[in-house]
Length: 67
Image (cartoon, rainbow, N blue to C red; front, side):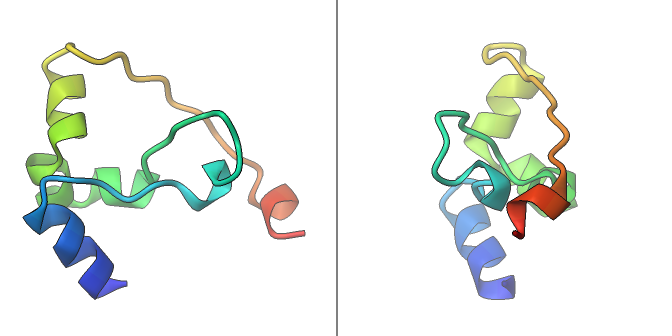
């Protein structure tokens, strides 16, 4: 996972939320969004902070995702 985070930071990218995989809802992993280096490096999160992109926080019931 550390390599995935490092790659996303290096590319100004982000990590997709595993709960959103296979859905029409694009979502950034909340853990990555909370990561101090991830939050600062991610172009999408910087655009959201600048209010160029709209942020919608969703809470996923992990019990339903893991079944």
